[in-house]
Length: 224
Ligand SMILES: *Cc1c(COP(=O)(O)O)cnc(C)c1O
Image 1 (tube, helix red, strand yellow):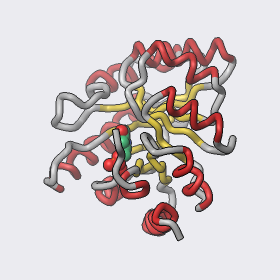
Image 2: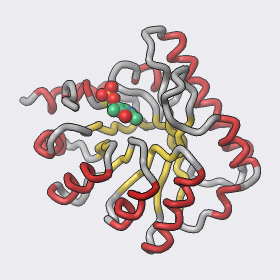
Image 3: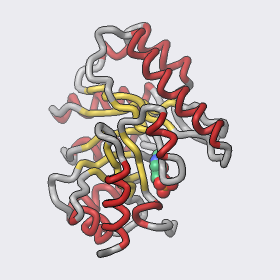
Image 4: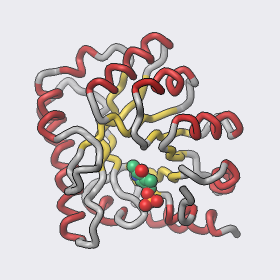
């Protein structure tokens, strides 16, 4: 068996029921995805529009693509118009959310998205400030979306070896999701909590993740 298949099998076996695996295939070739697909994996994470579309063009149509990188508003239409089975996990501004909603409405599709929150200590990481998100939901901003389904929250923990800090970040994301749901009682289907990567996903699961995004532990190191 290949190392990719071995890794997929053992990670899957370790995930509790209700936790989905996104295999982060960014910077790895389509052949690596094909190997994982052969092991039954269907959800793959990509961080660049062009790379995602190129792979989708040559890979099976039942793959669920997860966009996890910074999405520029000028690339939104191309992504939406490809009509893929797609979850955009990294919506980090209202401007981007509006662009996605407009493109989806125009294409006659429903865009499925997660909003990304910034709780990590690094300023460089992207995402909404929690207060900004809470304000958006509390004032019902989502009610004006025409063609977008808000499917939940995504986030990353601080880049540190300090497990207490990482767990605190994941707990903060879980609490933020609960606060959003409490402040927006008519919001339906805000179910996902996407958090946890190769080095920290067990802590994310302990804190309530429903999706983990794992790249290196499946495909090995990336060559940028
Ligand atoms: C690259 C990336 C991952 C996967 O990271 P690994 O450490 O390789 O598992 C997960 N989430 C996001 C947002 C990423 O950009």
